Amino acid sequence: MTAARVCLTLVAGRKLRQELFDYLSEQTDLVPGFTASEGAGHGPNVQLHSASERVKGRADRVLIRIVLDDEAAGRLIERLGTVFKGTHLMHWTTPVAKFGVID
Image (spheres, rainbow, N blue to C red):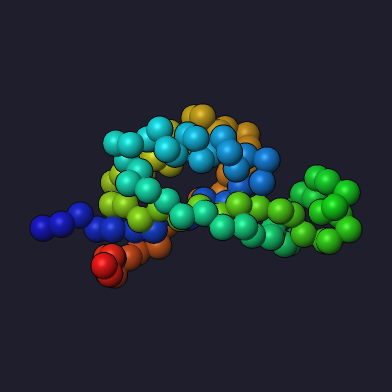
């Protein structure tokens, strides 16, 4: 039986972008690769740090998605919790029904 796959989504302030990319690239035992995109944080609990964010009314964010097995996602979240403690790094997982590459 194959392990259940999930998509781990991470959301962080854009200031953490390069540090997260570097860290995830070093976790070769858990992270097979990842996809990143830009995002905008909205809501009453979102902190707007820069003047630009306050003018726009949204926080600049980076979204990272990683497809991996559920157990590896749990281990990665534990590691991230140690290294990025206090950074308000958000995370969640969603089940992946199918995953593949079309060549």
